[in-house]
Every structure is written in structure tokens, then in C-alpha cells.
Amino acid sequence: MPSVGVKLYSVFFKFLLKHRLQNRIQTSFDDSNPFGVTTRPEESVAAANPSFTDGIATKDIHIDSLSSLSVRIFLPDTCLAASESDFHPQSRARVRASSRSLDPDSSHSSVDAHHNYHRRNSYGPSTSPPAAANTAEQIRRSSYGGSSQAESLISKQETGGYRGYSPSLDKKQHSFRKLPVMLQFHGGGFVTGSNDSSANDFFCRRIAKLCDVIVIAVGYRLAPENRYPAAFEDGLKVLQWLGKQANLAECSKSLVSKRDQHRRSDTHRHLTDTFGASMVEPWLAAHGDPTRCVLLGVSCGANIADYVTRKAVEAGKLLDPVKVVAQVLMYPFFIGTVPTHSEIKLANSYFYDKAMCILAWKLFLPEEEFSLDHPAANPLIPGREPPLKYMPPTLTVVAEHDWMRDRAIAYSEELRKVNVDAPVLEYKDAVHEFATLDMLLNTPQAQACAEDIAIWAKKYISLRGHEFSY
Image 1 (spheres, helix red, strand yellow):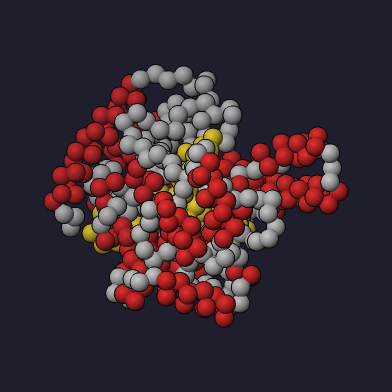
Image 2: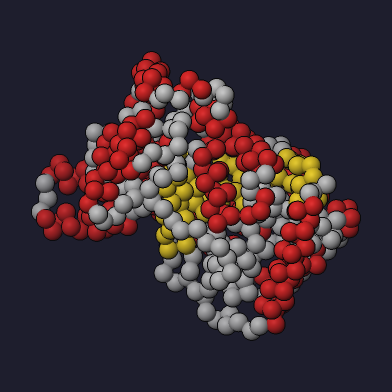
């Protein structure tokens, strides 16, 4: 059973959330304004930090001029390593040995679990971040050949202007290490939560480190200001934006190479930089590999992830070079008219009971479309497209004390019937959002869940020959 502290916090949490949902039901909103909101005033927000102070650099980008849709990018410092293709196994071994000889604490790494984690990922630094004066040494120790990236970062810090990481895309003397991309959709019943909340920021940093991926946390528009299908369309729009970024990066490279070869006029160079470089997100252009894309959804975010995955399957090659190779559904926000066993037995469960979730669905779905068997709510209704056999591998995470668990398990069973790799990870004595709620983030179960997700995801996002590098 959950601890007494969790039970008490659940009572307080449900009281506040129910009060906020009822207030929003009674408040009239202007549905004609498509701009919307992506966070609430009561939300605790973590500021973005574009430097690798704790191993992860973050930045916020507003990607749609017609709405409040935004993303937060989480870039792990393992991207500073040079491309794997630039080094032979023997040279990598020599570099690792050299790094260990420079680090006086490396001899104790077998004892420290934190060091074990970094050793599994093979790239990251094995010590806590040093002072600013040792930035160059830290970057050299955390990479195989990242001296040019280090110079880029340090030069930015010395100028007194932008102090974050900024890869120099014009340089050709090195190749950037490419990382898989993971789109993350936060929870909150479509009504609360945000991609830059303190809890979501902590969770995304953990996932970026463990999975060794670039995490793009999606700040979709919230209800009831923007009802269905706004949040779902925002998720698909971010996936399309990712594809555009990859194509723009390729265009920018070709234009820059032509400029260097033919030495065009200053006017042409200005047009090239304006059309190509200024529109390209440099972190994604230098380090993102959209051919290895994973979608991860938390609670209601899992519903969005499943929708975006379906649309990606329908689009096929139209999304090239983006390829969704897997999805992770963490305690999805599924419901239906015919109740399952868990929906009856656990209707008054911890944090999110069934009555409160129905209120959230009433705020999210348009009044004329409200139904618990809506395609956004129930994945088991017949006639949904595309056929399940075309879905990518799907990992489902469920909690023992979550009333939504049975329907999520049933959806996973339907996927397995058509030979889709769809395992279920069930955690005992766990509650809804046990791995992402602010109070529960530091529990052993939350850490174990993130590690389990990383182990499974690496089967599909690791380069061939490195599937079990964790």
C-alpha cells in the first residue's frame, strides 16, 4: 500500500484539483481565440538553462506564431562527443583510459551508483559539474573529440552575451554526434500541467540522461480555453516541425557549401544566412537524428502520443526524414462507457479518481461531442484508423492502484494480438503518475521506472551494434 504521506498528499491534491476543475466549468471562456495558454499561474515553473551546468542544457522555443504552442528542448552533454564513426574502438579505449587517469575519483566508480550510470552511457562525465573556470577541462573529459564544440561554448561565455551552448554549424573539421529524439507530452488531464513545470523539467532531464536522447517537451494548449482537438493537433504540429527542421538543416548545409565553393557576393551570403541558418534550430541541426524518434506520453499526454503515432503511421513517407520507431504510454488517460474491473474497484483511487477525470473530459471535449467512448478517450472502440498491425512497438506503464490500468492493459493486449511488440510494466503499490508527480519523483519506484523505460527504448533507438550499450 502507498505510504501515509502519499495518502495524505493525495487527499490535499484531490481537494485542490477538484476545486480548480469546478471553477473552470463554471467560468465562461472565449473559444474563438485560438492562441490559448500552455501553463497555469499556480504552476511551479523551472527556468530554462542553455548551458550544461548539470549535464543537461535546456531552451524554450515558441514554434507557432498563431498559437501559444511551444517546446522545451533537453540536450544531454553526451552530444559533445564526436561522432562514433570518427573513432576506432582502440582509440576510444585509449581516450577512456586517459580520462580515467585524469580523474582521481574514477577508481571508486564501481562503488558509486551514480558513476555506474554514467559508465553505462559511455559518454558522460563521472563527477559533478566543476566551477566555471574548469569548463574547458570538463568538456574535454566528457567527450571523445569535442574540442571544437568546447571552443564554441567557451567563446560564447567569454563575450558576456549569450552564455549557452551554440554549435558552429559552418565548421567542417568535426562531425557532431547525433542523438535520437524523444517527443514528450506532459500530463494534467488536458487542463493543468505544463512542459516547463518543475516536475516535468526534472522528469525530462532524467529521461534525457538515462536514454541518451534529445527530449522535446511539448507545451500544448490547455482546455477549456482550447478544447479537442487543439492539444492533439499541437502534438502533430510539433512532429511536423521536427521534420521541417531536419529538411532546413540539410538545405542550410548545401547552401553554405555552395557559398564556400563559389565565393558568392555578400548579398547572396546574407540571403543564405537569413533563409537557412536563422530558421534552423542549431541544437537539432547539429545533434538531432529524426530517423530515431520516440513518443512518450504521461497520463493524458499518452492519449496525445498515441494519436500522433497513428497520424505518423498514416502519413508514412510524407513525414520523412522523421520516423517514429516506438512509443511509451505511461498510465494513459483512457476511459470508456462500459467500465472495466479496475474502474469499478478503484474508482476512488489516489490523486485522480474517476469522478474528477470525468470532469476533466467534460472540460476537454466539446459539449456536442462529449462521450466516454470518444476516439480520444477510448482506444478500444472499433473502426479506428490505421489498423493496429501498423503501429510501432509500444511500451505501456501502469500502476497497481490506478483505476485506468485495465483499459491500458487491454489496449496493449490488442496490439500484441497483431504481433506488435507491446509489453506492459506494472508497478506494485504504485499510484497514477507515480513516476512524474512532484512529490514522488525521488522515490525508488520513479527512478526504477525511468531506467526500465530506457532499457526498453534503447532496443529501438540505439545504432546497430550498440543496442545493449546501457
